[in-house]
Image (tube, rainbow, N blue to C red; front, side, top):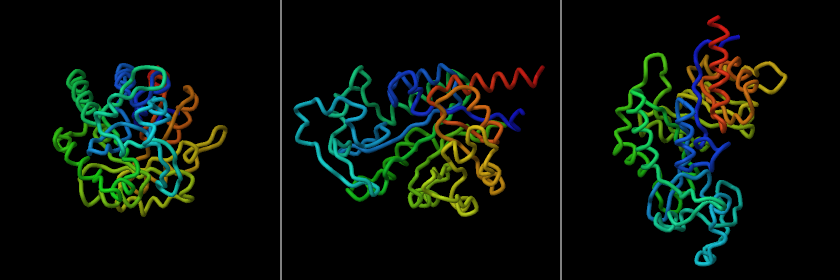
Length: 292
């Protein structure tokens, strides 16, 4: 069955199935593969810069653990109720982070400014707006240590003219979205910006109250199994969200076309994909099938 509308394919941290996540090369590859939008995560540095990392702990994705000059910065913190030991972005300046690389290849940490410039460049090249989903990681933690992630984020977006981004006819989601698992932060943002908001959810939420979420956000971002599990019919979450005016962006596709097709049939509005060429190919196949 063809989807009622064309879902968006969103490059999850670029195209990390092929290149290191959050690297400039990964985002560029996702754009070459033809994504409708990119997804990124932002954390803060000690001197207040927004950099692109899935977490503020650095040892998983950089060579910081092998750098003798930073050995003394290894520490333990409790963030979001979870205990972490390692090296954290908020303990480094942007200049120090710029000198770190991925463990095996040279893919330096980049800033949100750099990604916004890339999106603007690609939008001009295509002649249409490339979308961007920005996930804010641990905003409550950063605020608690005196790093105003919200203020810096909104100023950065304003500096890049994001408030002027327009939706495309027939593709109302092709613009910038702000998202987080932190429900208190998403609620706060509903009174601080007109940009659309995504409440990210996972199984820890239990039953998702779409009616409540619709009072402060414009979309939900559930784990894919919350919308449809392999070999089973849709759970009904996408339909329930749509009844309350919410769009549905699911995370994270890693497999091939069959997985994408199951979610498209369930009625999602977009998919975050590590291998974005796979859902793009699935959509092309659906288009050919139903045009024949």
